[in-house]
Image (cartoon, rainbow, N blue to C red; front, top):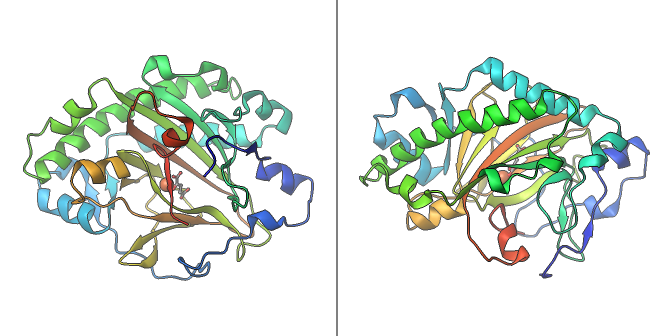
Length: 312
Ligand SMILES: O=C(O)CCC(=O)C(=O)O
Ligand SMILES: [Fe+2]
């Protein structure tokens, strides 16, 4: 593992637009994870109504088996999430030159770009992304917050405010489900938590049998909220060494346990390995919101694992 990012890859969209021949460094091979298979069974992932979170057993059982659940009635209106998705889509549709104004710098998280290249022979993801730190205020890097579409910044601020209410409710319920004092995770977080949003864009891929949208990984966060594309499937999660497709429930958040939560719960809650497949004809948009404990004085390499744990 290199200490810093080796190079800054080109957006996948640029490869697609320039009609470049399918590059070898997107071909995914792993002896540990089998072949890419879009037809694995649909997972029976628990669906939990957040307003009915009194049933602690349901939450505990979901997080200690699947490591995730589909949260419905989470308090953020569909119409607002629709607006969030719309501005993200509009951003990715902008001309490359406009998006490049927000390009992520080598060795940094925030901004527009794609995979961090950390290994010489790293397989790349068929995915472009815009990562933005939302909370705390002093971690925000406003220069990467798009000014186009015009409402993007206002919507991001609104998202940051709203998502914190859902986060609080959920962390309290998670603590209760373990018979712990309900504020214990919140107190652990205190002011030392960081919330970042990652907008993922998966352009159509000429070889979805060869390339993955996102390689198998576990999130390094405490918890992640994932808003799937309303129409295009792609996410798979691993349970008991088998892959399952994650059903689409429009506007539900897939809440995933991250590595930090797995550690804080002594492994009772599982941080699941997941991956996203590419699609030959359809583009796909998702948004992941990561909550992480802010660990100070980490090297660049270590802090990458606050977002990702590569498993290949
Ligand atoms: O886009 C997806 O379905 C998965 C995204 C993901 O796992 C991530 O951003 O960490
Ligand atoms: Fe993830």
